[in-house]
Image (cartoon, rainbow, N blue to C red; front, side, top):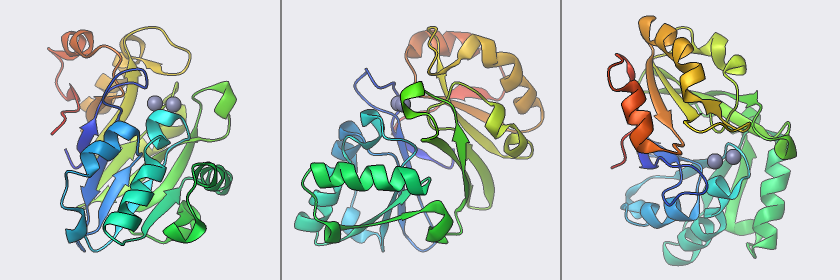
Amino acid sequence: MELTFLGRETGLAVNHTSAYFVTGNNELVVIDCSVSAFQKLKQLRLKDYTHIYVHITHTHSDHVGGLSLFVQYMYFTLHRVITIIAPSNTVKQDIKTLLSIEGCADDWFVITDVEKCNKNWVNASILTDHTPQLHGKCFGYSLSINGKNIIYTGDTNTLEPFEIDILGCDELYVDVAVGKSPAHLNLVEALEKFLEFASNGTKVYLMHLDNIQMAEEIVAELDGIELVQVE
Ligand SMILES: [Zn+2]
Ligand SMILES: [Zn+2]
């Protein structure tokens, strides 16, 4: 796994899905920041990284609920300004509003979007469907980490926007639910596709889990598909 996970559960659970990786320049790149992710990030040696970036997939609180706390912790405790990378200009405006409501000053953080950030680890954000309330504002990412092509779906109820990029990618991190939900991919229904990806050499990692035990049982005998593990 190129990503290290801080949590792998769904929004209504305890350890919200969030992950990070470290670049060759010793930059820390985090994907989403809930309160539970923030509590775990604090346990890393944050001052040792040359810079910290946070990619956001969408603005549900299990993905951004700890963002203002992280900004404030870094600014006031470690005297550092983190860079937030939004998946689109619209989401960037929403995040700025959110951080303003939560009492962050503009100069406590830098915010940019994928188009402008010019970072070699991110190829693109990928617009997907998740919930009607956030229509047009939910994204996954195509990433390059240590020479590997990675697709990270974020929260999604469809694989369609990702399929072209999944062809030839090394690792797919995908949101699934065991229970029926219009907001998330159903694990059983998506299995056939996952097996196809796995047979083409893409390792499939399941995240944002609503029922870890049942998900483990469903994929137990299947090659190339497994649950993400948390440190
Ligand atoms: Zn979520
Ligand atoms: Zn969500």
